Structures are given as C-alpha cells and as structure tokens.
Image 1: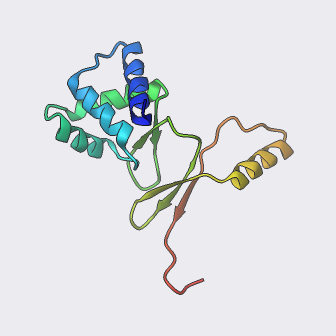
Image 2 (image 1 turned 45 degrees about the vertical axis):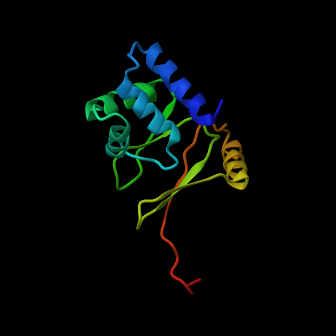
Image 3 (image 1 turned 120 degrees about the vertical axis):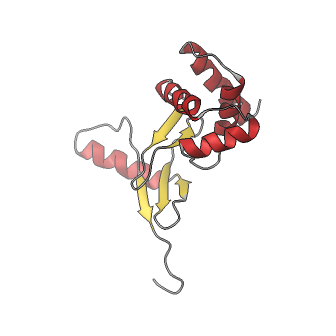
Length: 145
C-alpha cells in the first residue's frame, strides 16, 4: 500500500471513529491532504478538492480538518504571519524553515538539533516530550556572507 493510501485510510478511520460520514466530498479532501507535499491552508485545500469533487464546501473542509486534527492524523501549524496550515502526521518528526519573503515552508530534520535539545532539557532536569521548531529565514543575497 502506498504512503498516500495508508494516510487516507488513517484519516478515513479517524472520521468514522468520530461518527463523521465519509462522503465523496470528504474523500476528495482526504486525497488532496494525503498527496500534499506543501503545507496548504484550508482555502487552498478547498480549491484543490473542488478540482476533484465540485460540490466540496469550505464548511466541509473546516469541519473535516477539525475532526482530523482532534483524531491526531493532521497537524495544524499556526506559523507567524499567516493563517493555519496543515499537514498529515504520517511523516517522521521534522522541523520547519519558513521563507519570510515567499511564504514557502521547508521541512528539515537534524540529529544535531534533536541531540542538543535533549541535552539542554536534561541539564535543566527535564525530558523532552514534544517540541516544535520553526525558523523564519530569508535567502541570503548572492555574494553576501
């Protein structure tokens, strides 16, 4: 089974568990979410889902996203300077760089950062149970150091 199909199955199960019907409109949205390689907002998800199923309403998108977030299969990101953006939880832990000029979100993973965070928490008598790292960056101009 592909990652997208597995992710769609998990989202479908979360909807059913919450007592939400899995309609054609929601199936279109789930497909869009599972295939997204960026971090779209609800408006963009609505636009993409409508290309598959014309009858998808924005209210259905918002309601479905809320249920999926509550079910733990979708992450809502509230990046500075913008509205909520979404991604599925099927991926390994990663952090984000946000390009402040373009709004692009770049995912990255760094063992060094993970190790340093654990070390700092341990030195202060804590254990990391969850964290989120967002770096707000601007591309360096050519020739600058």
